[in-house]
Amino acid sequence: MTVSYHQPGVVLTDHRFTVPLDHDDPAGESIELFAREVVASDKAQQDLPWLVYLQGGPGFGANRFVGKQAWLGRALTEFRVLLLDQRGTGHSTPANRQTLPLRGGPREQADYLAHFRADSIVRDCEAIRPRLTGGDPWTVLGQSFGGFCAVHYLSTAPQGLRAAVITGGLPALDGHADDVYRAAYPRIERKVAAHYARYPQDVERARQIAEYLLQHEPVLNSGYRLTVEAFQSLGIVLGGSEGSHRLHYLLEEAFVRTPQGPALSDAFQEDVQGLLSYAGHPLYALVHEACYAQGDRPTAWSAERVRAEFPQFDAAKALTDDGPLLFTGESVHPWTFETDPALRPLRETAEELAARSDWRPLYDPARLAANEVPVAAAVYHDDMYVDAEHSLRTARAIRGLRTWVTDEFEHDGVRAGGPRVLDRLLALTRDEV
Image (cartoon, rainbow, N blue to C red; front, top):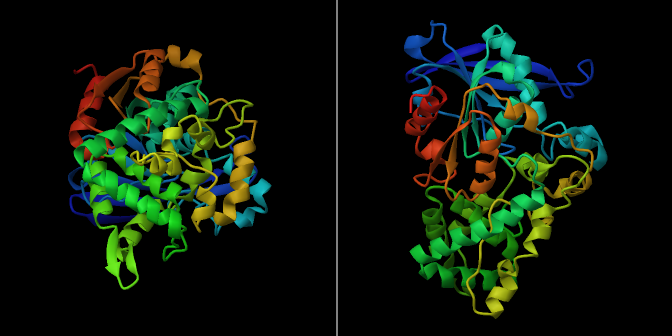
């Protein structure tokens, strides 16, 4: 049963689909997918081509827009848009600390979560596409991890695509997670240096907070243990267009005077809790490194191991040497499953996934080299989350792919740039630029 309703300028229709957990076993267990169809009110009765949006992550549901926000307004000028909650996210059979125990123990949970990568997401898309389009191909818009899914789509089911538009999401085709993080830490260090150059007062503020945490290690209202390493991971915001400013405003409200001396303010703790907790997107932590995994080599807590190659990120060393505290970025560590109460029950499951060594290949270089689907990708010049050099190498490996390399936007360019970014990329798929 579908339900339609209205927001300013748009008609929304909610869809629910049943798909196999394992598409290789269609008679086995099934899960539910949720997707929201959006069409401009004045085009609701028209026969429009479809655009399916694949959100970044992994682990985030599709955007909950109001009306024609961000890029959606541009898309609705010519498309009927499908905002898909990828499996395990949003309303699509959520996977979290509350639901995963239904699977059994850590091994069973890990086996279940192995079906929540780009390969299964693309097969979900292909399962529901004929039900919506009557079999016609559609355009995919993939943001970040959604772009990884789009490249897998091109590798395995290009017949389902009219065109592919990718924003900040061209993955390395054959790199291990170690290669991803080995390239990431220097980029993160550059972002931190740029932040401190903009806000030099934050050098001392970050050091003061780190010193306080080493002595006190407070527990936030949610039960989150705010360790120094967790505090450093606030650097994840530096990859966004307004991230440096957000971090600055956060740091400047860190302390208040109390009868017992300086203490972390309630406002600071509340904001930190919102930024660091995985309660709303636990799949991000659970399968983040797995989204890079291919073949028989385990990820084995890649970000944690590779971080040891960059001692400048060691907080204790920085404080001892009177150096600046370096923030970290998009990485998940074993301690993440100890500090966050939303993840603590899943620590053994995460260990099982980190040790797994039977991952399927995600990309087909030969098929990509023969690609015939129009593809355009925005590559952000110094993207903190997805390495630009890796992306450009992949762009050269996909026949006919056209890139727009820009330093005008950060990783969230499709949000910050909105209609202009999507318009530019759609034009590239049509040879209009």
